[in-house]
Each structure stands twice: as structure tokens, then as C-alpha cells.
Length: 235
Image 1 (cartoon, helix red, strand yellow):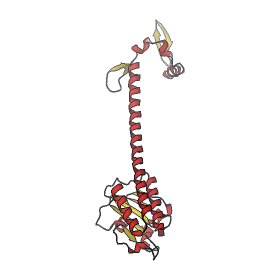
Image 2 (spheres, helix red, strand yellow):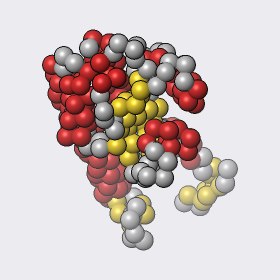
Image 3 (cartoon, rainbow, N blue to C red):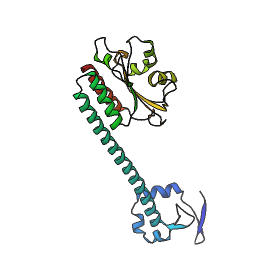
Image 4 (spheres, rainbow, N blue to C red):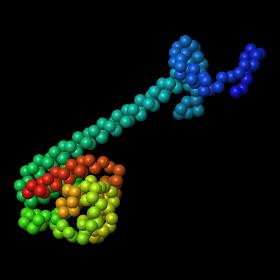
């Protein structure tokens, strides 16, 4: 604490913390001493000049308003994006409900993923029973394996979690799903079709390394997985 002369008399200057606490307890202080507002000068937040306390408060409020407006626009954009995804999933649901055979199911899934979700590189990996209609389908988007196929071991973690996973996948997984050295896959979404390996999985690939990233929400992918899984069991 320092001492400052006032009219020839030295008095103890108040600590800044005491002044701040006093102003917080007395928010009407500047209403009772309005002339101080025009005399107080503060550094301008965007330059070397000074402004009055009132002007500084206006600047602070304006900056807070700009941040709040930016957050609002971001929330609106997210809401619109979610609405669009819900609409696309609704279209997929209708197509899958109308699929009466394994062939129409795969065709419906191909149309929906390509037209609504912009996914041209995808694969449905299944281990169906011997009498399943999926054995009659010849499509690059469908791969059938035995339930005990050793290749499924590389997806044990996925099947154990029962949840979709997004991001870059191992080379062995990429080559098995999309082909070795023929397709450039920067990132992928792996969606289990049921809790067991025998149920299969849906793999969606993209050349964009950021299209599917580990931090993205997988809620909608999980819904797609549930819809496809139910449709597979129904045909």
C-alpha cells in the first residue's frame, strides 16, 4: 500500500481489490457520480487511443453481442443440418420398408446412400444363412462371408462396442472392404449391423480425410445401422 498526498496530507491509497469490491457492492455508484463517467479514460480495445468508460462499456457489450450472434448462427446451422439428416433418414426408412427382397433392399440402400448422403463408396458386409436371398445378388456394394471368417477378427473391437466408428481405418481393413490399391479412401465410417460379427457391418468410405473424423457425432449413423439391420433380418 502506498501513500499519496491530498491537499498536503498523506493518506493511504486504497488497494485496487477494495475499490473493485466496493463498486460491485454499489452498482449505482456512477449514477450518483455521473460526472466521473466522462472523465474516466480507458485504453481502446482496438487501438492506441482512449475512450470514456461509457464508450468502453458499449464496446464490451457490442463484442458480447457479436459473439452471441455468432453462436446463434452456429446453432441454427447445426439445427438445419440435423433437420436435413432426419429427412434423409426418413427417406431411407421408407425405401427400406418397401424392400421386400434382398435385391430390392440392396438397390434401395444404394439409391439412398448415393442420392441422399452422397456416398458412392460403400459396402455392406454380411454373413447370412445359406438360404438367404443375398446369395443371389451380384453387386460391388455387397460382400458375403462366413460367420467364422478370420477376416472378421479385424473388426472385433467394432462388434464388441456395437457402436459406429469414424476416422481413418487400418490398411488391412481398408483393403479388405474397398479393395487393395484401387480406391483412394481417406476416411471411413464403420457401422455394425447388430452386436455380433455374424450380423455384418456397413462401411462408407470417402476420399476426404476429414469427411469422417473421430470427433464427429455417430448418433445418426447408429440409427442408419439399426434401420439396415432390421431390414436385413426382415427379407
